[in-house]
Length: 219
Image 1 (cartoon, rainbow, N blue to C red):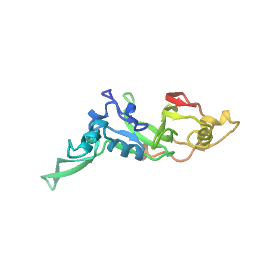
Image 2 (cartoon, rainbow, N blue to C red):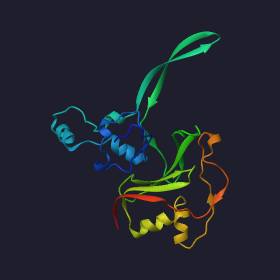
Image 3 (spheres, one colour):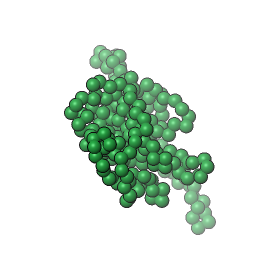
Image 4 (cartoon, helix red, strand yellow):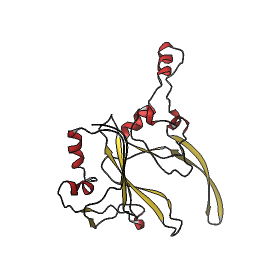
């Protein structure tokens, strides 16, 4: 994990070759993943720690990524009421994991445009990757530029899986021209006036997938 300006981390699945850097991560980051992947990561034990616990060398099980458990932090807030300042202690829960549902576009704020000063958004749709429990692919759309890329993670591209992908609403605009279809679908552009909620109304026809980032696939 690197990049000082990184806003979001996409965690496709819980295999160890995709978890590099998470043991040193803090609860201030934002990790997008499925519910199953979150549970697998938080309960993961390294082999040497499992053996040590079984032998009684250590007294409790050791989570490899226990630093990513949600934490409650206390902070001080000063409010002004009727001309008087009042200090209040508040509790804030910090959870680095942001679990999103499969097949539902979710908008995320990722900063501001340096020229216009307007908020910038990315719309993320999580799709099944057919690899292991909880594994996911991520379809990312820039609603301002109408650009979309697909990050697959590890995926198994067998025929039944490809047949299911063809029926995924999020992918149909990009597959329609290859399937001889002409479809209309609701616009997923972000309405800036509605605090990031997906815009309502409007349609689009067949779309072009700008790029596919493929990790490992088995056909």
